[in-house]
Image (tube, rainbow, N blue to C red; front, side, top):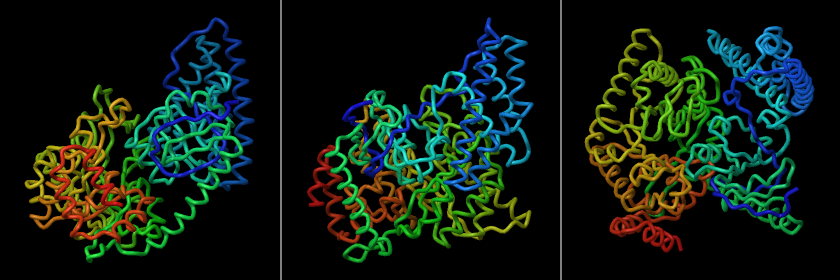
Length: 574
């Protein structure tokens, strides 16, 4: 057992938590190489032993799921038991071992992937979703064939802190807040989509903790601080007492902030801005009004695509967007069209491997090349617009041609729905994300045609400063207080003002209290952030004087370095 080990990572999602470590070491079916065996009987024995372990494992999980999560979750696990006992699943593995002399690992991979593919090709959405269950049970079987080398997220049914080499956004979206107190990963950066999603879910998270996490064992007691990035392994009694006191103070502060949920974001001198939330699932919209959010400034639709093993059809998307629209009770919901690429992958799209994925075939570029994806999504959004106040936003726009092509598809879809007499809102605002410098520099031209801008600072910083936001080696250069970034933000806001449009911001800068006076001074109209940041930002805005902020912004626009900007903002805070 590791003793009193301190590990320093990047604090990416606030929260102080104490809990047992769950070391997540997934086995990937795709990583299994084809291998033959000279001892088929021994391999078949391994397979049968693995099946017995799997069944015992699943029986225990079904019983616990029934007690803790209810019948619905238990049914999913029962389905995996049925799959293991299905004559079309396990026996073919045995045949591959005995007849073709494949190893047990290879047989499991071949049959699981083949079976999952059959489910993925079925017309029924429900049956297509079962492909994920097939892969899950196949991975579990493979894990036991290898002698239980690994663990699965579906095993988690008690309060734990996950420790992993990495968690993909699709892993993170599956986390159950009831049991996952937080997570610590070896790699990752502050603006990775895993970090963003952890913030949205309100789960304490530390990324980029390095090789130190290799010393953490299953069941070790962990104390983590998602703000400072500190992870303490097997803390002593005094440390535990200190952490519990910090947790008490944190809860006290949270209770005090609740008073700001119902307040409007109006400055001392009477200037009001809209405070919105970033979400990734329709479920997140359900409790949003209680946090003080006045809108959804960014609905990241990619998580709807990433949480399944096949493409969501129009009806599935429609139901998700409709749920979000209804949950917000007429308040604005900005839906960003599919933004896949970079650190967000969809295996079932079979996208090509790229040397520079953040600069490559992603987001609107993918959707314009595969217009079927965009048409299906826009049909679902327009249909859902009949149930609330939806807006559409296109990501990764670099030039006017892309915008005009995307807007043209939007208009064609709207006309087709009219011809089909399908209800939808009469007027829907359509805007773009400003995350590429070329779009910011042409903001005056765009402002004549779009309804609004939303500045995505996470990518805007990355592309303006030529800094890979996932690369820990150059993370010191990644800073949204860089004067070049601030001037681009100013240019975009001014362009929207000149043409009677509005500018929002949905990058992490919008949720940073230190940045609030600067953004107020620059004239930002709508601020969208992780729901956990809303009350802090409202408290900050309510105590600002807009005229003072404008003078501060003018001074900052003349500064030369991020350090000068930060120093000026810290002095203003005091």
